[in-house]
Image (cartoon, rainbow, N blue to C red; front, side, top):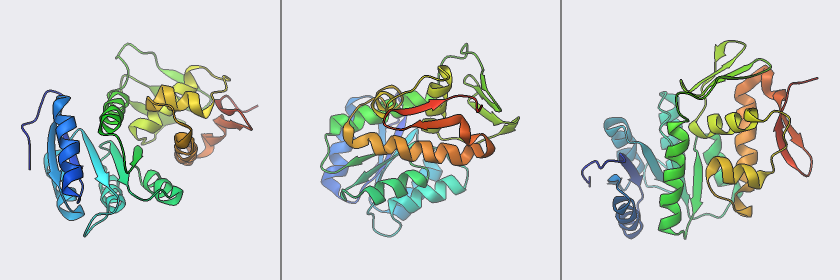
Length: 232
């Protein structure tokens, strides 16, 4: 079922539990989003490709094609629409698997629909990026152009999710400054919760993997957090 696309754009919700899907649709609609709902992964993947939503809310445990596979197939086709996973399994492995496949965030059931809406809005702010006037940042072989949403390593483009780009930009904005996981959650994800600090670790690992030879620019400071600095 599709609502008319509202001013804030269309969000695709793929959730097989209809009462949950209806609740999520209600709260997103109240906040000015258009909403399209599907109840299985195959239909959800087709809708994502057909409708080009501004964001996807994917349940992990879906009939047919599960949520992580929907995300993986979107990423493999070059579609980097922001994705938030819903999961009833309070299992760290499921969360990490989802993020490694290109997801941007996750919410564990039962959840507050207001919190989910806040996560969607925060994710879209990250995806929108900063004003065009923001200056290009350089650190070692890494160049970030926020206005063009462009990341380069040794002048070669690197494909980053909106969250990965925002995380790298935040670290590069103050080279040598050590950020705690809680600080990064608050500044990059837009919320702070002890249970979410593992999300930071997973995204840092993914980011390092994409930076390749420049991965050493992001250092782990034991017991403190992360910093970006030139390798000495």
